[in-house]
Length: 193
Image 1: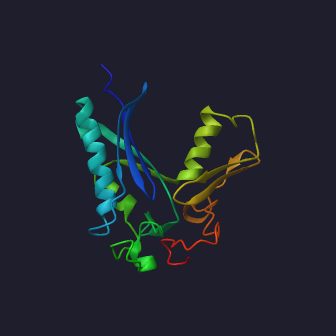
Image 2: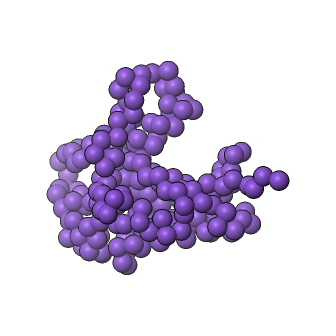
Image 3: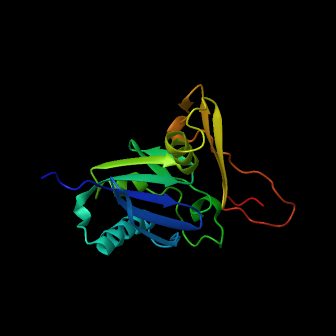
C-alpha cells in the first residue's frame, strides 16, 4: 500500500497567519490565527509549526506524516546562512522601533526553524505564490506576460514576463516596497508615515 502523501501550507501576513494540511484530493484542515508579534525572533515560525500540528490533530494525522511545507509570506525576504528569513516591516519591531510592534526582531528565521521539523521547505513571496497558482489553475494560464497584485496589510506584486515568473534576489522581485496612499496620519511598520 502506498503511504498517504500530505503537504503543509502556511500563509503569513502582517495581520493573520493560516495553516493548511492537504493531500492529493485537496485541503483537509485549515486554521487561522492573528500573526504573533511578541516573544523570541523564532516565535512566528514556531506559531506556524504549531498551527500545522493543530491542523493534523483535527484530521487525525501524525504531524510527522507531513514532510513537505510550502510557505507564502509577505516580504521582503533576506538570506541568512543560505536560508530565507523574513525582514517584514509590518511584523519585525526591530526595523521600525515602533510601540505598535512589541518585539526587537529584524529577521525572522522562518526557513531555518521550519527545517527543524520538515524535510522540504519552499518559501515564496505571497504575490509570487498567488501568481504561480493563477498560472497553474486560474485566470492567466495562457498569458506569457501578466501580473498579480495584492492590496492588504501591505501591497505587493507577482510578475510574469515571457512565460517566466520573476523571483529576483532572495525572492523579492515584485515586492512593491512602501508607497504613500493617503495623506492621513498612518504609521507603517517600517517607521515612516
